[in-house]
Image 1 (cartoon, rainbow, N blue to C red):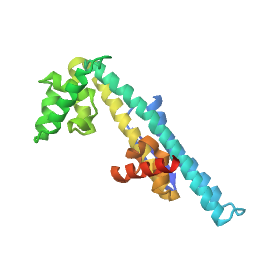
Image 2 (image 1 turned 180 degrees about the vertical axis):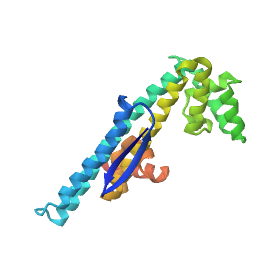
Image 3 (image 1 turned 120 degrees about the vertical axis):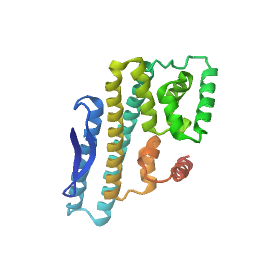
Image 4 (image 1 turned 45 degrees about the vertical axis):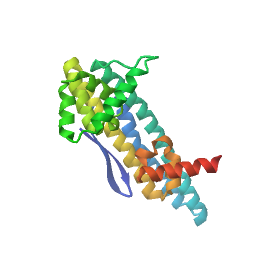
Length: 240
């Protein structure tokens, strides 16, 4: 186990508790968030202590430094999302879930209808138990092919269902894939925490945060999804 942290204004700020292997790309991304924070704060301190700069120039340079860092963290989020997609493909393969076939329009539609009905179940515990036990494989397959929220599931519940399916189909791979899921979540949290720390110290505006985060604004910017969408529309209209 390793504590991944960064020193911010003399304080040790924990970004993630890493329990997986201390190697590979996920570990590298998680560690890079700490380096990003510390490198940015060194840059900010140089700006603050530069006697040649006016207060206005310092403010502008701090804003630019913060924006550069937020954009770098968004790039890490982009790479993480690609790794998450690859992970889900491995999960489905190990869980013996058939992928969508080119030209097959019926299966996705059926899956969406299954997800809609599952989302409508009032007994959330019964829904999870039904999917974890695999009593109705067609339902489990649909859930694992779709994003968790469509079936009314949390990320943790979805991971539990996937782990159970893998345990049934490929028990020897179950532990490894579960650890990878934990590592993905730890890395995601590290990126989000680093993003918030940079925002706190640089005072980046919401517009700047949303612009820097891009397609990952929903995960990185700490405001309601409706507010993010409103800002994105306004930014798009301004750029047009």
